[in-house]
Length: 241
Length: 303
Image 1: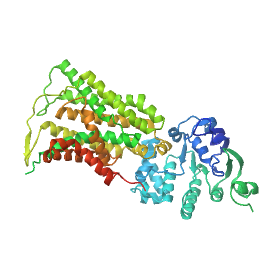
Image 2 (image 1 turned 45 degrees about the vertical axis):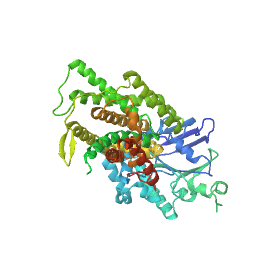
Image 3 (image 1 turned 30 degrees about the vertical axis):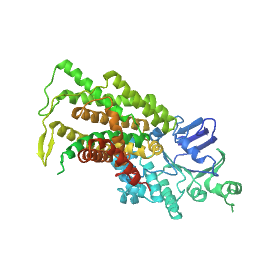
């Protein structure tokens, strides 16, 4: 039996030495699974996935991607290792065209695959194909999120991590983003989603972790976590039925 | 009646400013600091080219010039080596000085360090070569009439053509290649560039190589058409910054267009107002751009 696609063990990470934001958090994500990371503001959710992506210094603990130790791998090499990350904000290059935003991510692909992968993305996201010549900065919030996800998927990652994909979007675009993520799950990509919109995220997730003060406090099947009265009232902002 | 000769003079001067401004604009947009030592890299490139030309002359004797030009293959060979040397020098300065200060995250300190590097480079050049002007070639070229009272020398035509080729080449590299796209990406969002797999350190190295190689070529142009002096880079600093800002920081075509506008304005000022106003033109244009359109001609405002 193959091991987990992503395994994080006792991760301690932060921006300043001696000031950890993530304090010994662990997570295991199986191949093809969607894991949702929830928690109150300031719990360290974004710092956790940024540390996994190589963007926040790791002080101790271990990150394994498809069985490979990637704890000390710098951010720009994580893509080659198979991990793609979509930041919460400023996740497109605004003064580059939609097409160039996709092409710039192809640096890690063999040149013979580039046009094929770009065509695949335009087929998956026809809205982007129509706007390929436009500057990414002129797109709406939802379209930018779509472009950021397409850019992450273009390298066919083993694991896709998204930091609050619905943040700052209008309700119309929030449903568009979650519908897009539901479509992506059909392709079998393993996903880790940090999200404040717990209900929508748990609806598409398989399992979920609740991070509090830099450490996971609860873990379970997504639908059960939503109905857990303690977790629901303490961390998810609603009362379970 | 206005003598249109200022157009040729302005285009030549503007080409030199524009080539230098490409390095200034790339350094500013990618490394986020104003490198006041850029003009001195230009001077070092010119002197290194001069040394290679001298070494070739010592080894092979005087080589006949190419056709109507004042120079032969030794200068072409030497400028290629000079561009390589200037790139290595820029990478060396970045490694021992700028990179360490950049890591501390305070860009004001990096800018101040570039002032220091400028003074050190300039004084070292003066110490080695003295402040006396020197030349690639002392032969006087006859300018050919091309109509409307304009005259131009074969060297000027060749250098304008070489500038056009270099600018088009750099523009194509920056817009059509993966390296160029990576440079644009780093200039827009360094953290996101890392996320998409771009080696930011590699992009920074390419930025220094391209900028300093072009500075060397611009310096050699000054050397061929005017003269070589240790202060030649310092004299170009204000016009180069004015050109980069006028064109729009980060835009290579903008830097070149900005350079040409400043070159033409300077040449027009010399002819119509007086030579003492030449240097003031770059300053006047710089102030006007900052007041009227701070993002420059080709600058794009983000939404």
